[in-house]
Image (cartoon, rainbow over all chains, first blue to last red; front, side, top):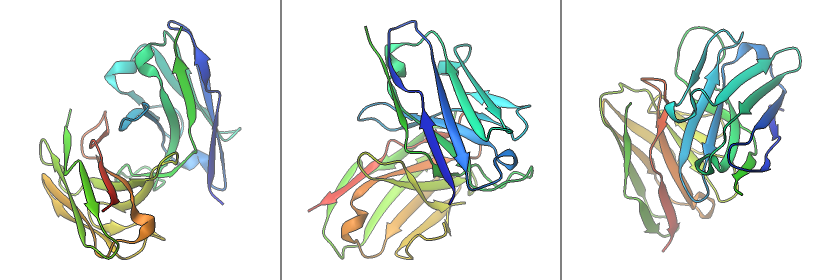
Length: 124
Length: 108
């Protein structure tokens, strides 16, 4: 069964740091682009960052550039999101999500599957 | 960035109704559009990708159409398990990938 399980969320003060992890199983992790997508309480979905299969390309939404770093360890089938200088507006459930299709030819970035999410709360 | 809008923001419908949700992109995105369903407290679920391709395991009462800037998601006969929020997402121009604000389908 294809599965993504996030961990690492919690309560952190403004300006603090947190590292999220996503453990993948049931598929060849190293063959897929991976993303983080977040959802603030009661709000819609916001793509945060993604990373290429070998980690050589990374992209971010403007609001997190310079503060968040996406990374992966293919040997451990794991995706990470290092979040620094956290702000109240970063409060959200953070989901990791796989690109639907593997390979290097672009056939669209559709998110499937998704993890269950981990809640990050930034508050003093 | 490409902006996505959806209409209506919410719709009240009955079991068996035909429901249509519209998504509009701020610029042409060809067929690079997906639809997701999200139930409270759960992760989103991919329903439709490439504007009209049905994801494996998704009931055939869900269909998608459109290209360019205007897209629709249709539920041909609403079932009790379909009450949820639906989001569109563009994958034509990135970063960033952008989502619509969502359409909540609730019970009439």
